[in-house]
Length: 202
Image (tube, rainbow, N blue to C red; front, side, top):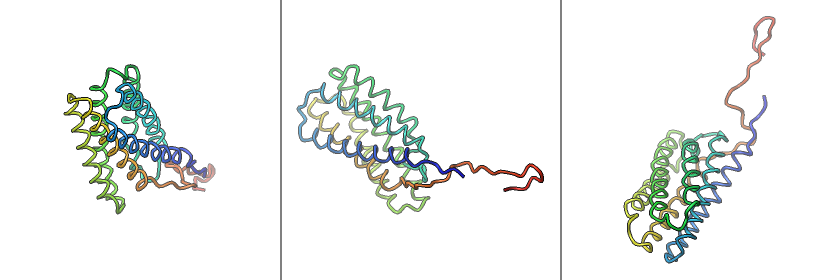
């Protein structure tokens, strides 16, 4: 039986970890420096959305063992690609849209991760309560960013930083705890050969 390549899962996991750390670093930077250029922030967030969308699609099609961290990444990956492209088309004048769209994305991801935490409990993953707690906190951060999108630029930048930091920590912890890479993982469908003469399984 031909074994499934672990390369896509490894690419997705490494990509998740790298971009999650980038989210954390960017979040801390925005909190510390809320007076940055709106155009610079827009370009950065747009590029990161495109990258994360691509990584999520790779993760979805990699079919990891537990199927937890990547199970909603087809729809979410496409959403991030679309939002990232829209923001990059006009990064300077879309601050309100950026905050609303990113806030919604963070809120939805928090909700999806709540479901993943519940599924993790069924799989016996001991860290599921922490995933659940971080998912709730991240969802709240995204919701606050959406509803406060009309506030001043400085406050919005800080809220944006908090949301990015929460999203980064949530994704980092989730992918580390729930994505298990096995070098010689068997495919989902097991091919069974039969003897054409007497119909017996071989």
